[in-house]
Image 1 (cartoon, rainbow, N blue to C red):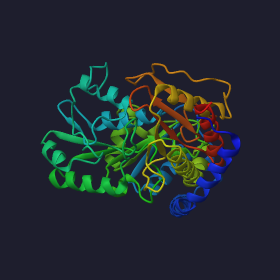
Image 2: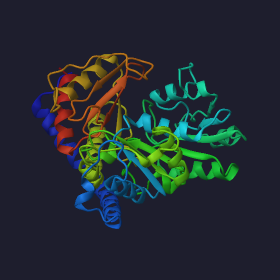
Image 3: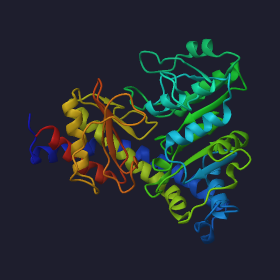
Image 4: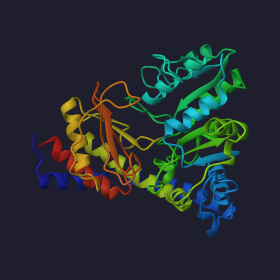
Length: 413
């Protein structure tokens, strides 16, 4: 099958018309989230001097304190830890896990296996030096039901006295199925707290920030973590991550991030805090643009005959669009098409390769200004059935359309 430019233009115009009602719903969520972020800035009295950074240890950094006040308020938490020195979302989540868990404790996942890189942190498949398993923390999981939803009876049965913490994952990761909505999160957290009120609920919030009008803390989570080069960085944060939630647990994560007794008192920003403040301020709008691009991608590839998850009219809980391509050749071609329309390294042709933290070879397209910044626009997937590509991000819906056109041409060339 081939698709010429004329037929592709017609298809794009038809899809664009179909998705307009969904766009209006996304804009309403964006307005709500932009309002609460602005209010957090106003309440923290963010001023020009807060944009300047610090060096060395970073003691008494007023900009850092104000930024963390903004994050805590916008995400309805008691406290926040926002640092450029976090290198990934996995790093922030690991700091939470190692901060609150001790030898003899048990970590429970109620959504089956976590994201690939977290499996290594937990060490449940094999023993990794420095993993939770290596420190005597046990792990259990309750697999999802066949339709991808929570097995509530299984969760109730799995909870036991030594279950110290439960790990929830907002995004689907490399799993074909629905992502985890705030509504579903409220239900499972209520069940857990009813059975074991002292259980610590830790949420991997990557790809989910500002997609809905509420965040996991408002669903009852105790500790929430994510990456600044995804949603909350707004496409501007050059690195970093955040932890937000109950003060005692944020402090515990900070002690693991730096050192006990030092905690959150250190952490400089030699180049200032402006990009982190500005990125967070514009994040609700950029996330909305990304969502519009993913809605368009969903309907486009559905029209082309590919299975998609979620479908374009479905409620969304993250910025990830899964497209079932069926073969490794198509997966590779799609990623090459996205890379070829990237502003950076467009001339590079991605190849599948082994990557730290992943079980299967992975192909990644990410011609981004900030290395690994999924919010800008990226496409990746493991070379395993169903050979799905996971598309996410897009600083503008227009850019997503341009990249998708190139991916379609690559697929049908």
